[in-house]
Image 1 (tube, rainbow, N blue to C red):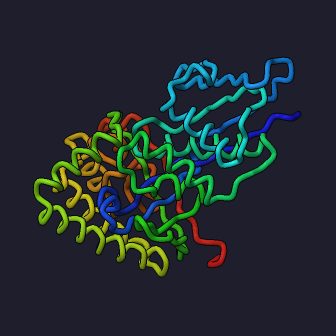
Image 2 (tube, helix red, strand yellow):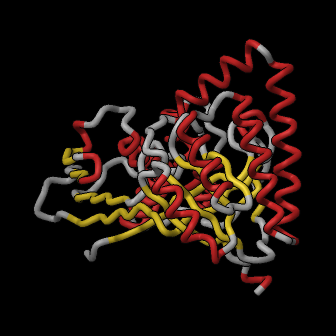
Length: 319
């Protein structure tokens, strides 16, 4: 049996992080420049049920049955088994590679779950539809992020820009014109579960104040959707900066992110904000294409550990 391979992209949230957990809309886009790849090899000479998992990026080389029950890889495998009504797995080796930084707001966990679910379902001869893949990835996210909105697994599964409101059907967003983003890594690891839990604690203590912030973010996100769908996309810049001001009030920025955001704006970016759960991880900046190199260099000089330039391209229907 030939090897089976599946891959999935990273993602960034353009607008609405944290507020999306409280039923306000958010916008996310896939980032194809980083990805997870899962390859599954049949091992016919090994005993049935022997499943070896190799993930060099995290130093993992272990049998499935030795992993804790709540391990995210084990959860994705067992949820996929349950979805396919497969009681016993054939012998196999699962190899996972990823260029997505961990705990940086680029959806590394959801990307692994999506790629692993797709690869395993295909290996077992019964590929799953996108909605089922996304649901399995969300089940894994719930275990490890406490109270996730579901936006990460959705945008990564469908690999298209989405408008997402928790508890409602998501919508694919048509893109009227290309726009360029720089993603800069602060170098600070920031587990999503901690930031989400801290925001919830603050919300419980002062619901009126936090609900007002979430409402303002929701309005910005609706405006951003119109500019993405109809143009002009350069007007997304001021909205990003306004969203960042509200995220600072929520309490999820940090001095390092603030400095990178200021650096990007001073270098000519049209707007900038953190992306993801905050407290570290990545910031994003909207830039004119001819300034992307200069803004990227300024961010590296200011302390970013890595930058990535990506374009969000017009939808095929608009080309």
